[in-house]
Length: 239
Image (cartoon, rainbow, N blue to C red; front, side, top):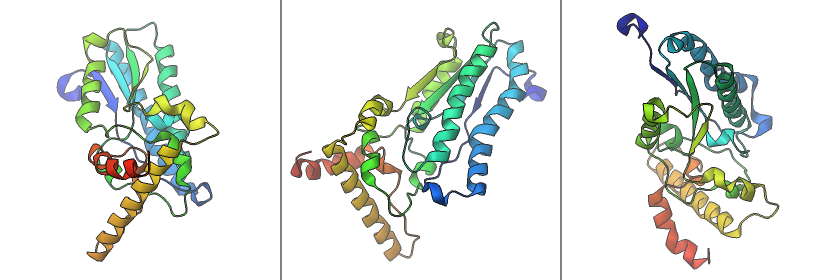
């Protein structure tokens, strides 16, 4: 970019991976890959971009996650890397506080992308552990995150620096609920219904000769269409 245009005004590190596993099943390779892509990649890209951004009072935007702001079962390596991106963003913002560079992070919830569509949960999980962070609204679309990215890159956000901005349809607003000793019965029912539906879809796919898919990330943040389909069932159980 510098070679072609002579400058870099905005830089965003967006690439990332996600995986759900029981802690005993995480291999060293699994851990190293997650750290390399989700954490080390963010730092090395920032290190390379910052000298150019400083010349133009540019903007550095990291992509964190709601998983970096709250604990989530079966995603320990992912939560660890995204939590590190959150604090890395704050540390970078402090180090360059006396310059014109702005550093912020977006913390999305579930976004309707192939990463989420193909997300798989391991066998033998306790769905009640996930009930505290089920989304009550539909998943975000890539355009939603892109629009927020564009805002942070614009002059309208000139006073936004060192911020971790959630775009998660209220998921992190439920942190206290997730930490409560008692799990919401209604949320637990939603999880069971979504899990059953997801398993059924996997069985149907297997019947068509496709690879069977375990209950997917819709469990943590169901699509609006899925929620609409679930409403009659939830009403029947009094949710």
